[in-house]
Image (cartoon, rainbow, N blue to C red; front, side):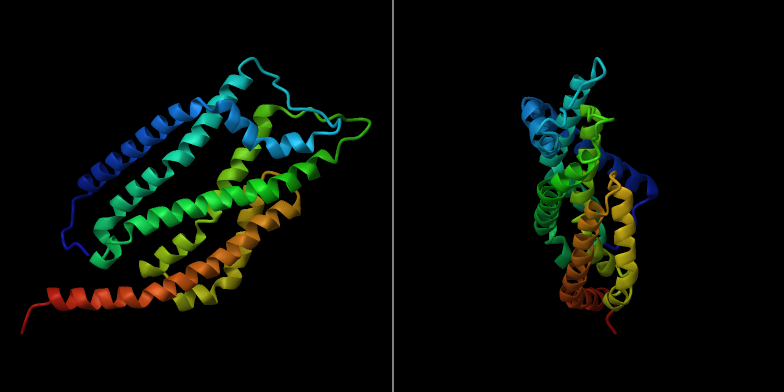
Length: 256
């Protein structure tokens, strides 16, 4: 771990630099994604459109600029996914000075694994959870009420769920860093699993905009499994970190 202690102003300047690079990468990717705005929109809202099939209604734009601004949001979401490896690289570059030399070599695995976890979570939600959620919501149509969902509202719900599932699948990375930073030990993480289960279900209830318990459970259960996976990874790498710390202490301590 670096022995130098940078002033707070230099840390803030470094943080600002990383944020600027992340935003520039995001905007550049979003500009490119704008060329595929209709495809992105169609892919994201496919579960909702399918749920409204068979005469239950169709998506509607009820405001003059609704289609245009929804396409912009779709391009921004697509750009975020495309730029995610760059954003994660900037995150790693910011925290790397506080890591041991052996841990700094995990930069590429961190970016690759984190990106794959996010994409896997978003794919899982879009493929398995969104159809169930929108089918559940569409079943409340009756002879008194006809479904006329606004495209912006459906897109907002879909985007929230998309990001929620992507972020929730980052659980192993979060748990690994909690253990690696010494904030929580592997034993503490295992003892706290019942509380983690409760937290996962609370997070699932908060992040899912729909009120059906199925989508909330399908978000919470994978988070619980991924929590245990993170504990396993932290246990596997815990010995390496301890050896790295002992080696650095031995090399930096004054010779008698």
